[in-house]
Image 1 (cartoon, rainbow, N blue to C red):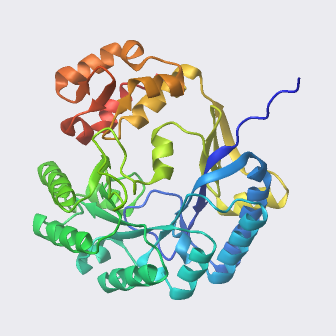
Image 2: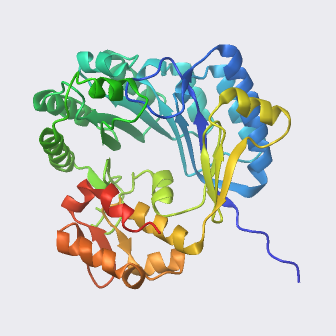
Image 3: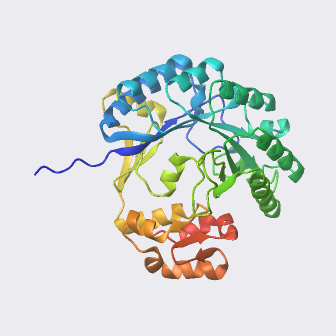
Length: 392
């Protein structure tokens, strides 16, 4: 009897590395680039899609960056037609990250026509001074205008991104941005505390003593975020992510994920497989982690030679996979249902990480019941430190 082919991978991430200009806080691989390199990248990406299409049956697709919405109509059409030909369209959730400065009516219509049904828009702040401070290329006015364009094009699942603890951001400025963004009635809200990554302008300014970090204010801003978002009908389901339930869906209980949650990210946090394409993208398929070269020129050269642009491959042991899966899953408010964790990994969370769980419970960061382990509200605030305890 012949062996069954492996199940197809249901999630696809594509990295688009181009930006109009680099933001002050950004440590992702991105670059300001010429039209010629973008055209080369598009051709290389199509080749990479062809190479993995046989292993894919995407239920979630996510184009991140960089600024995917920077690609012009012709470039998007080339990518989407190639995906159509390869039978990669029709995902239940197809997200594209956008900058408010690069949303247009024609582009929005094209994306919608090809089945893109979710847009994640990087607002970051509605304070003009802070937008300039962060090196953003959009104005507050563009945010409202772009949101209206997306709604008119038929997008009924939009995420808005906000940042807090930005240097010189006061609680009042933060509250004003929160109020205005919540009033826009998006389906999803993501909000991140500024992280000072090595080799970013903000990090160097911090090192040079141009400003200091106020941890107490950052904590108060996070509490304000949770208060305002939940009051407005958003349900927190991960440290930085809030989603609504569709009117047709019953309210999600604390152990459930709201209907407008980002399914693509939930797959990451639950340890699911995904293919990662584009320069610097990581993929995770059947216990093997791959990372593409973080160099657009080199990425294009490899694919022009009909070779995958993979810089490194790493096979994870079952124990290490299980530890990473535990760590990522604990970012979610629902934590880990113990039976689901065992089904996904083959390990018993309560037994195999018993001492770590005990420490977290004693510290007030964790909560263990008969069928679930999850972080408390205080624990979620320090989720990265809690997660490290599960890595083996």
